[in-house]
Image 1 (cartoon, rainbow, N blue to C red):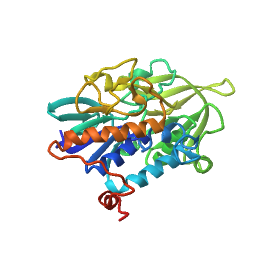
Image 2 (cartoon, rainbow, N blue to C red; image 1 turned 60 degrees about the vertical axis):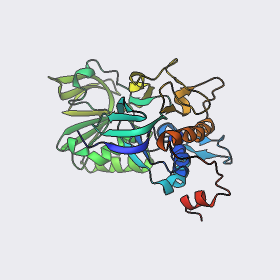
Image 3 (cartoon, rainbow, N blue to C red; image 1 turned 120 degrees about the horizontal axis):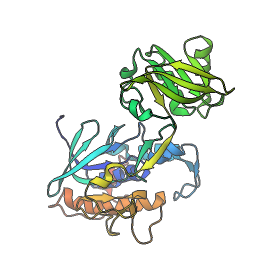
Image 4 (cartoon, rainbow, N blue to C red; image 1 turned 180 degrees about the horizontal axis):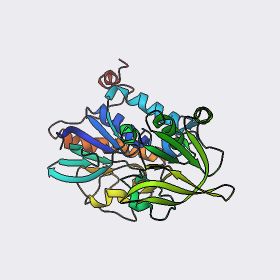
Amino acid sequence: MSEPIKTDVLIIGAGPCGLFAVFELGLLDMRVHLVDILDKIGGQCAELYPEKPIYDVPGIPMVTGHGLTEALMEQIKPFNPTFHLNEMVESVEKIGDPLFKVTTDAGKVFETKVLVVAAGGGSFQPKRPPVPGIEAYEGSSVFYAVRKMEQFRDKTLLIVGGGDSALDWTLNLQPIARRVTLLHRRDEFRAAPHNVEQMRALVAEGKMDLKLGQITALEGDGGRLSAAQVKGNDNTAFTIECDTMLPFFGLTMKLGPVANWGIHLENNLVPVDTAAFETNVPGIFAIGDINTYPGKLKLILSGFHEGALMAQKAHRYVFPDKRLVFQYTTSSTSLQKKLGVN
């Protein structure tokens, strides 16, 4: 087990609400780490609608999910938060007053005085392909995410899907795998055109294979994959030899391990007070789409407001002996100094 990472505040979720919370906490001198199950910052904005326009962020007539994420990252730069991506928080244990021990699925351990759940609708979980018996291969030769590229060196790799994730990993793993086959149900892709062009060039050069069709069955013993049976677009059946498969069928939202942390839940949401958006567990807060209270609106701007009030109460846990004086960034020279504008 690794040495615990000690921090004032740990935020679960690096979407817009989690990012803006870094700003509010930073203004009050609190150090922040963030954990997110995705491999990129931005939460639902980055994963589900990076190019989709958002029209209701105050003062910004229109911004994309990607654009909002970039702007928030620029805004929190002075506070230098640490991100732990591709990790999911598995357990939360109260070990002090206030102090929590938080462990991720990668074995990372945090000790934090304040925990902020900003996990949107929960954690993103990969959609399982409708292939009979696929469960037997999961974790040994079927994987839904790439944690370490080296794991796929010299593998005969079948990548299934036609979106950005499928194309990105096809291009990234092609140089180190023994052979890569990309399988998609049709010859059109929902991925960046440049990546599609690169993939087609590799196919033309004979450096990888592209097949069209859908998997009907998997072959192999003891969780070790040996081949996939495929029904082609022309209804012909064929076999693709492979020892490893990466299916990218999109993501779905699930509450995940949050349900096991001792926090009260109400219809898969976390009830909070509206003074500080604190849960029934002192020191654990919930902001953004994952919380519920009378009059709750699932808007990004609501999450920003919740993050600001949360930070005021969090300050009491982190600095119990320090009086908090409310200040405005427009007039406070000390806040402006923290932001690097004075």
